[in-house]
View: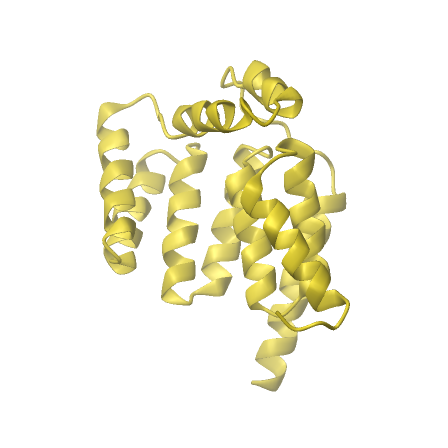
Length: 186
């Protein structure tokens, strides 16, 4: 476990440094800029609707066949079949390598299987394709928490709030991580 754990921790740290302090990636021109602006300005009554619109737009590949693969992968995740989900999402990213949501779905499936390295790699690719993907960032925060890296998790969660200031799961995660960082048990 020794050298492998050290190497993995270095890889995860390098990933975080590139993500949070590297050059700003350019989002695909997918027409989401106005929605992301609305999300920044949303209040308690409108933020969930705007976030839902963004997520629905991210789930559309522009191809009926690719959307079918995405739905099959998502359904497999919902049915607690992450291995099957990996197969569908892998077919999706093979055929639509610029579709961020395919990588995000596969990252979730890998994480559910306990494959942290591949999950991190797919989260990286998701965020390269769509740097404002707040769910992928949140997932990265979850990975950091699972690796018992609360400071890194906190930094990622704070990055989520720069995109989606009222994201309820992130606000709760920040509270949880802050308790851990202060040495309090949950």
